Image (cartoon, rainbow, N blue to C red; front, side):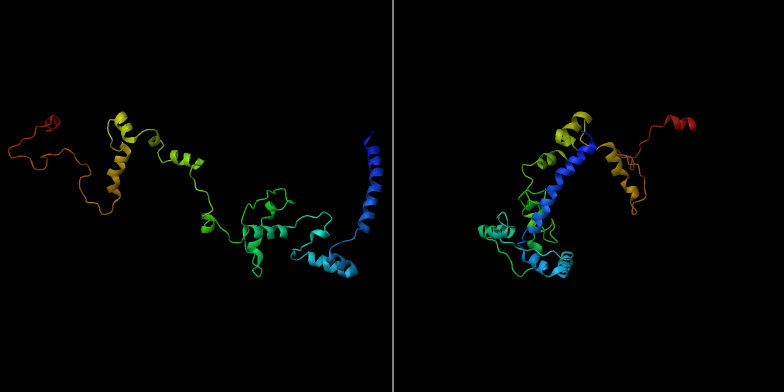
Length: 225
């Protein structure tokens, strides 16, 4: 069957079905009183209703007996939850912090889980004690493994630093670069004492030699002189 003939058959098949739908919708009696009021008001009522739809959405409550398929409304579920868990529902307070996470709580969204995924109260942050006390402690989680391994020098977790230095370097002193940094730190000091920067560590008797001590003459000095 070609595409054009199949389109003709589909059109011929769907036209009576669409006509039947329009007939059913025209006969359908609306149970919402606001809709009935608008229909009674004529085109002015319809205009008023369309203008009100452009504004703030007002939540309405429909009794389960007026719905074609009786089911519990969200407000009924909220009342049942407050009765079971002994919650208090404030009447006069603005409902900004009584909003529920409808993306997760209502089945008309594809992200429905049945559990509130977030707190919808404005200004609710993670540094509030209310949130901090609800957090899970990192005990026995994967963060415990990271904390044992992620340290500034990972070699210190494999073997002791003193044992490694004594085995490999033969000493437990800091590395050459660290000693170089500590020695040269005085060069950046504004109040440093002017003097010889090169210290002789074994300088016993160099400044005050014993009386009658004659130094061994250097061969290079003899050649120069």
